[in-house]
Amino acid sequence: MKAGFASRAAIGTFAVLASAIAIALFLQVSPTLAQTPVDAFDDHRIVQERPLTQVQRRIWALIRADNYENFTGMAFDHENQEVILYWKGILPPAFESLVRDPQLEARVRVVTRDYSEDELRQEGARIARLDLSQYGITISYTASSSGFQGIKVAITSADAIPAARQIISSYIPLEFSEAAQSIPYRTRWDDDSPFWAGAAIERTGVGNGCTTGFAVTVSSTEGIVTAGHCGASSAWETVTGATDVGDSGSLDGASPTTDSMVITGGDYAPVMHSGAYNVSPAVPRFIDGVHEPAVNDYVVVSGAFSGAWAVRVNEVNVNVNSIGVGIVGPGFWTVDDNGYGSAGEGDSGGPVADPAATPNHEDAAGMIQGGDPTYNTTCKGYDGGRDCSSVVFHVHFQDILDAHSATIQTY
Image 1 (cartoon, helix red, strand yellow):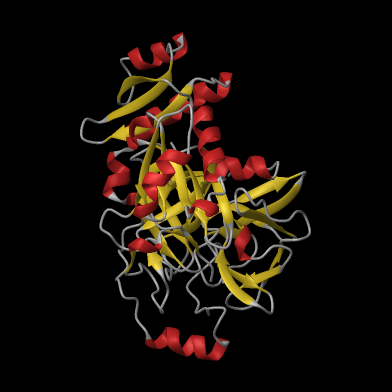
Image 2 (tube, rainbow, N blue to C red; image 1 turned 45 degrees about the vertical axis):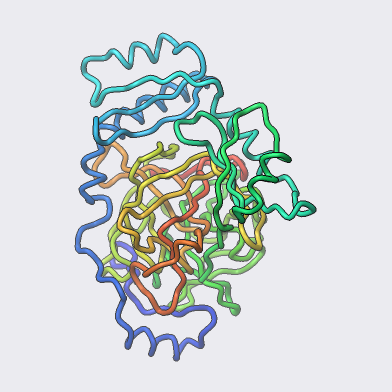
C-alpha cells in the first residue's frame, strides 16, 4: 500500500503456488543473501563513474541533435577515468570541440572504427535470425565484439563452431564463441495506483508473475511496459491484494523483436522502485529520459523479486535467441561483478536505469528479459527456489519505445 508512495513490502506469491501456501512459505524462508542497506544508485561504483556518465550524456545529446550516422559506440575505462568514443571515419567538428573542452568532466579518447553502430546492429540482427538447424547449429546470440571491431557470434555448442565459421559469412569481421541460450524470466509485491516501474504483477486468475517496466505514452494513452513473454492480451493485477493494474490487450499486443508489450487502463507514474525487494517504505527514483548505456557502464536493475542492484554492462548491440521466445534485440548483457544472481524468475519486464544529472533522478536504459543459465547462482533478494543468473540480458528501452511508437513518461 502507498502512503504518499507505493510500498512493495507486502507478501506476495509465485504464480505456481496457492496464495495461502505461498504466504506461509515466504514467512518461513529468509532470503539467501542479505540485502544491503545502501540503495543501488548509491553503490560506490555508480558514484565513482558519475563524471563518465556526465560526458556520456553530453555525447548522446550531440548525436540526437543531428542524428549522426557514423557513431559506433562508447565504453568506460574506469582505471583511466576515460570515456572511449568509437567513431567511423572523421570525427565531426562538434565532437572535436567537446573532446577538447577543458571543462569536460572526464577525458574522451577517440578510436576510429570501420563500421557504424547501425551497420553492426543490422548485420548482427541478420545473422542472429539465420536458421542453421539443418547443420546442427544454434546461434545463442550476436553482439558487437570487443572494441566494436566486428560482430561476436555465440554458438550453443563449441563443437559446432568450426562448421559455423564455414557457413556464416559477413562483410563485417566475425568472432565465434560458445554460450548457452538465454532463458526468459517469469514469475514488488504490493503496489497501487499510480503504478511504478519495478512492481510485481501477475495475470488475473492465471498467475505467471512478472515486473512492471517504465511508464510510457502511446497515442495519448498512458501505459506501462513489461515483457511480452509474460502473456499478451491479458488482464493484470498486483501479486498481493489483487489490485487491477490494467490490460495488455487493450492497446497493442507484444512486439516480438523486443519481447515487450504495453499494459493500459490504469494510472502509471514516471517513477521506479529502488532498494531491496522488501523495503518499506518504498524508495522512489524519478525518470528524466532514456539513453543507451556504454560498455563497462554500471547500471541498476530493479526486478520485483530481486530488488535493485548495480551491475556492469558487458556487451552491447546484442540479439539473443531466447528459449521459447525467439530472436530478441537489440539489447545488452550485464554481469554482476561478485557473481551473484542479479535477476531471475519474476523479474522479467523490470526496469534498468542509469543515473541522470539530478540527484534521485534516473534515465531509462533497458528492460530485463532473461538470463544465461550457464551462470545460474545464488539469487539476490527473495530466493524461494527461483532460478537467477549473474549474466542477464536486457532490451534497449529506446528500441522498445520505437517498436510501440511510444514516448517515455518523464517526471
